[in-house]
Figure 1 (tube, helix red, strand yellow):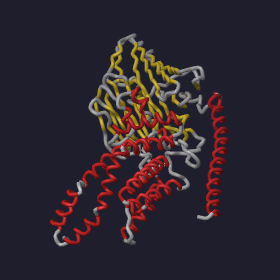
Figure 2 (cartoon, one colour):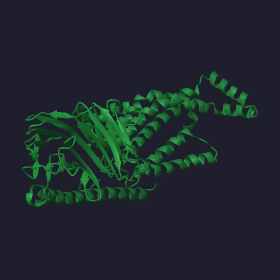
Figure 3 (tube, helix red, strand yellow):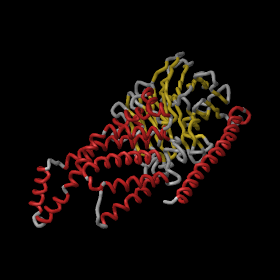
Figure 4 (tube, rainbow, N blue to C red):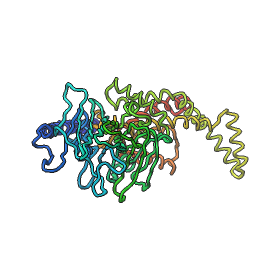
Amino acid sequence: MNIKNKLLILILFLFVITLGIFKKKENIKNCLNINQNENIINYNYDNIINNRNKSYKKIIIKTDLLNLTINTNGGIIEEAKLLKYKEKINSCEYLKLLKTNNSFIYQIKNNIIKKNFLFKNKNKIINPNFKIEKDNYILKNNENFISIPMYYKDNNGNIIIKTFILKRNSYEIKILNTFINNSKFPIKLNDFGQIKQTINLSNDNILINNNSKEIAFSTDKEKIKKISFKNDIKYNVDTKTGWIAMLQKYFITSLIPNNKKNILNFKKINNNLNIISYQSNSNIIKPYNIKNFKTSLWIGPKLQDEFIKISPYLNLTINYGFFGFLSHPIFKILKFINKIIGNWGFSIILITLLLRLIIYPITNFQYIYANKINLLNPKIKKIKEIYKNNKLLMNKEIFKLYKNEKINPLLGLLSVIIQIPIFLSLYNILIESIELRHSKFIFWINDLSSKDPYFILPIILSITIYYIQKISYKSKKNTFQEKIINFLPLLFSIFFYYFPSGIIIYYIINNIFIIFQQKKIYKKFFKKYK
């Protein structure tokens, strides 16, 4: 390559980086304007979307992580914005995990109900219309938590107080339903929680199926059970412990009841709405007595360290696959590295190198064995020519040759099998971990969880694959097999175009390490090719 071509490539490279920086600055400016306008709406009570002429209204609760919209008619959480996450990379809109409109429903409610239903009108259940002091509740800078009570009083003088408790730096919400029996008769009550969502499956990135949605729950008998949104089945189970949840890539909504016994239920309505719910065992509240029902709610990203603190087996909603038992400790190491470096891209590079060093003796043994077999290829070819009409004798002679040279081909295969769980575990971590979503690496890579927009990383990956093939497979003849092998890197680059950048970086570093390792071994066994 001459100097002019090198200079042209350098100019194009700098142009791409400059264009990316300019777009990023412009986007930040636009986002600041939009977010400032949103804050004005949130703080200006006169401009809130509530309609005071209705018998109910919607209130807004805002913390450092969440912005919730709650309907006072039943205390239903109708919308939840995650203030640390955007809808898309470089988007100005916060991610809406829960939302309710004419075409889509994803909402959560938690109430107390009666066997013949406390609130009844012509055999139809109606939600209590709670009263509340303000329209807006905001966690102040000097506060660690915020408590929002709602009140309802029925015709018999019985009182329900629903209290939402939100903490700073947490996606967990505590819900306390307090029932005060002011009647002369005992009342039988149940705690009830429900998550429902319109079935609206996305087809984005279908090659890696990263937008699949699932129902999940935990019971006494099963640590976790998942049901795809596509499945048309009903499920009903009694359990003393557990939780219910709806899952999607990176995010989860979950209700964790604090009752001695619950009935978990999943059903599909008109093939358009999935509903998962729980109902506690009956509690009898004597006259002039008080009963509290406690429930925990998670609305946010899948954070395995936090899940372990909240409820058993909730961390299993993070799908690390069959080798999850390896993924969890590897992820802890990856997080530790990132705390020091502060860049997930470089953390991926370091942990890939670390894993390659750990299994270096195994892979070294594998490559040495492969090269020993390659040295025997001329002898094996000669045996095949001699005994081409007697396969039984041919195999016997080849086996004898391996025995004399003290080579067992199965040992080389065993080393490959040992490596597979380790690298599949790391692969699943990079696919499933929320920490990589919209995480910047360097230069044009602004999101490690999405594809390379300029197709540069897949091309680099295909080059490393091609180079590995050149080292592993050498032939002086221009055979059809060699043509196919040379064509494979191009196919890989096209296939990996849809994969997240973080995955491709992992494979590139892995391949570069393999190249150096194989070249070292190659020099030892094939000195004539130096």
